[in-house]
Length: 69
Length: 209
Ligand code: SF4
Ligand code: SF4
Ligand code: SF4
Image (cartoon, rainbow over all chains, first blue to last red; front, side, top):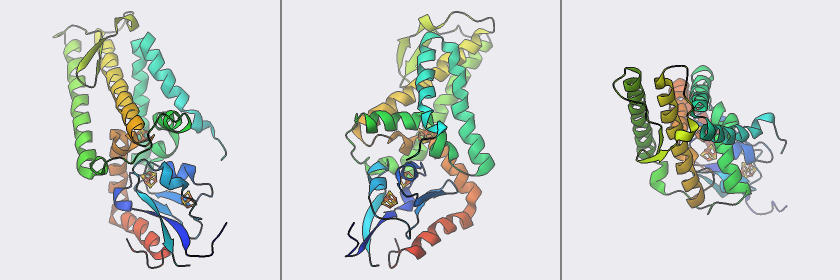
């Protein structure tokens, strides 16, 4: 897995997250958590940017962004 | 990923709809889908019901995801707006109250039992085969017909948006989901909200959204 260029990370647009938890279920490394039933939060130190949560999110509020390592 | 017992609760959702087809009084069991999420959110301040146990969400995920009966397109922007989600919640709850009122009328003897299931608040489907009488009051049966109507209607809406959009797009505007999130938001308060946002912002170098 190439991590050469910028690292890819999932970013949640929390203002429109419905806290359904579909992203949590699908994340292979448990990098997402629903905080107090209000919104999803990605642990940026764990996320590997695989994009599974992006596909799954019923509200389509997750994006993969390149972040500088 | 490891499967847990609660990943199979979709079976109960299928069972529920099936049982109601044969005996409408089973519709009463649907109250669990109403009270459990509320109890979890009020008691623990989480959307644990949605996040783990909701069989309906799992069912849509299964049919739309695994079986591929979904276009897997993004929901339109308005569908995830608070205006629409809260509006739908209010509409849904009004219809719920109306159903309770109709039940009350039967209890009070002001109206006869209607052995029908109403789909999408408009279409009356015959359902008399599922009623075999009750030793209790007919109002008990009226509530069952009314509650089953609500459950069937939300399933049909959910299946529709499952096909059109992402498998679990019902969860975007599901009244129980919206309501439990509202409760959690109120319980978490401004500090809870700030906490959820702050840590996210801090961990993203330069990525303040
Ligand atoms: S799947 Fe999307 S809407 Fe649901 S909790 Fe995750 S980010 Fe929020
Ligand atoms: S991109 Fe992959 S690793 Fe990162 S949060 Fe989403 S599912 Fe988990
Ligand atoms: S939003 Fe509704 S359908 Fe989706 S998981 Fe929650 S209660 Fe179930």
